[in-house]
Length: 205
Length: 205
View 1 (cartoon, each protein chain N blue to C red):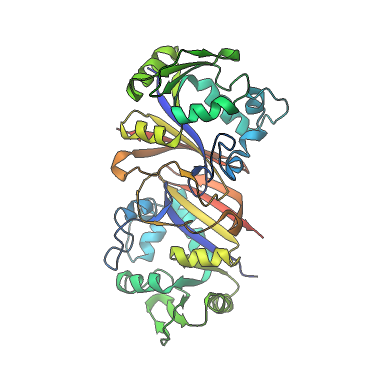
View 2 (cartoon, helix red, strand yellow):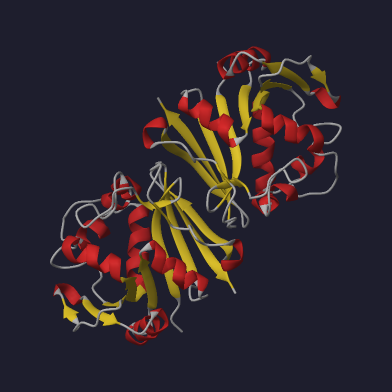
């Protein structure tokens, strides 16, 4: 049975992205500092079509995340920002289901990524992703409001956070709008490198 | 040379305390859930004059924190809340310097805690605490606004956070009002139990 997971990097003050986000600044001011650890890993650089990077313990973390997802779900705004920002070979290499209000034909990209546009809600997008995941798990990629909708609907099984030692001071918070009764968590594994702390949580139903 | 440190428990959404705080509810609604791990440790229960608790790895963390501080600094509001809430033997067992606008004679409590009231600012309170710490470190206890003042003034060397897998949704955030330029951090050690993740940071000057 496919699990549904969220996996995001956060600043220490809880931001997914900094202020002044936009198509040309998708992570907002200072937002790339959240992912400094990620940009040093061989697996992530390879996904972007770049060479170099380290085969570090952080790289093993990235490899496990990428290997886990058989399909993705994301919100329309994340797609819109990514459409102009992702490389010609987007870093998914799997079916991606975009929850949106605007119907559109599927969009095939190089490297195995195929975007499908789902107009009848997040539950439908998730069902289609599960059916397409080939027995692997489904990752709800973002943005924050999409993740919050999935959490409030009780549709997420696992959350992995990568907490970096940076403050952004303003921007988009992962947990904004969520109440204590929306999400009960159990902490699972914790690991760390010099640049980041990785924490796995299980959502308690 | 005494180091100056902050050591606080946080909810996963970044709160030190929940909403609706007051003298009878110093941690706010849900705030005690942040410290569920702490209330299971033998060292903390003993500090409150209670028996029981576990000699777990979390307990070793508490023991190290308590052993490190030779004196404390806190803000007036934290003192006011504690004055009605702390047990007859307060959990400091050391000199505590309260930064306040109201002069008051020192207040001696059982078990080695002595409150001193400092009316000429946080730097003066810190200098007095360093002089009284007997070569040990000084802990800036809180509240959030006092910690933020110390961080902005560049007076903190180390921060330890204990991040619990709970959401509070509202309340008092540790890092509110701080800008990225106020604090640069390097991540040091990370450890965890089933209930909490402990992360040590060094403030980079």
